[in-house]
Image 1 (cartoon, each protein chain N blue to C red):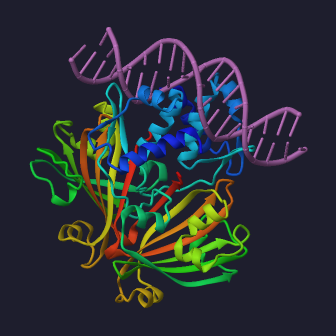
Image 2 (tube, chains in turn brown, cyan, green, purple; image 1 turned 120 degrees about the vertical axis):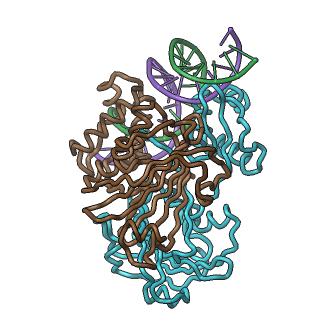
Image 3 (cartoon, rainbow over the protein chains, first blue to last red; image 1 turned 90 degrees about the vertical axis):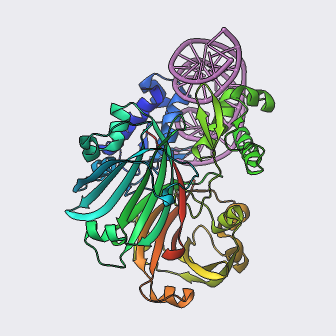
Length: 235
Length: 235
DNA sequence: CAGTGGTCTAGACCACCGA
DNA sequence: CGGTGGTCTAGACCACTGT
């Protein structure tokens, strides 16, 4: 791993273990330069990433302030797998793999960037939070990038499978968020009444070489949906 | 303005004017170093910001690819004023200032970070898209930071007033997104039936010195709500 | 005043891509 | 192989903070 990523992860681990409390200051850039034996620009790259991600605030003339701990629940501004969220938030959540099939057509609503897919692996999963069915995910994985998906990977984490098993580098996504009424399938899988509102997040995920990895439609019971976001202003 | 920000704005202007089409490559770092007469790290800072914001994709060994134009509609992952959105998206939108008053209490739901405010200026506004009332915004501005708000500022853009008139530096926000049913006030101002779902975005906005600028509650008709987000994966 | 973070430089080496 | 972007360095100067 690169040096600045090492430092980022190292400090982040300290923050998670609460070695630094909100309101504390991290060691100054100069101190970190000495501690890690790197140049200042390298330290700065790590610290600025922490600031960009909402963990700390850089205050000119004062230092690097630790911000209050945030709860990132279904962040739309991040690309995180459901598994990463569950781990981070320590949710009680289970996962039903409902279907894994090869398909040649994908729903019209998902092809929002004009891009298309010849053939995809469709994965349908249900997430149960605190024992209650809450979310249905439909994934369409580009089968010219991923040739097969074992059920265990769908059960555990597709992202982990792509990144750790297949060595792919997931890089960016475009997400569309709308609120729609529950479909027949929603009602069947989630056991909810008609007219229930659903938060629908449709996304298109790309790899670092800009190739298309997948389309995903994530349908959440609106009454159970909460998202917490951190955003910085870039003028 | 700093050099890297100049370069960022310069290239961004070119992208908006479509001097570069999606699929084109921007000039290489080396070319930009010569064009702008700066060091490579300075060029890189500008280019990486463009990539982070979803305009381009950096491809090792190939170049900097221009991505398809995105429509950022009510992005939760960015801090943008309503005015900036309207301008950028070329929406037909008007703005009713319903109320500007000094208050000493702010709604419980808005104080989600435990922070509090002694005294605030409450601004209530209604946004009409294509002539239809669609959004109600409740702003509570920290009156120890901003002492008065002329109606013209509320009519035009609070952010522009804060940044350009008062010289404040808006830096980050924490946003909570939920879906709730329409309140009595929603129904009155937006002329919608009971049980209509509303997308509610509550945010807390801070300045660069970490001081609290404002709480905002933005209530959108769910059936008119669309958000398009760009997100990069940071592992 | 000393210490902090912000910007910028000139140079180095590397991994990747395409011809 | 030359050109691309990614990382890293050692140093400089600046603006801001607190004492």
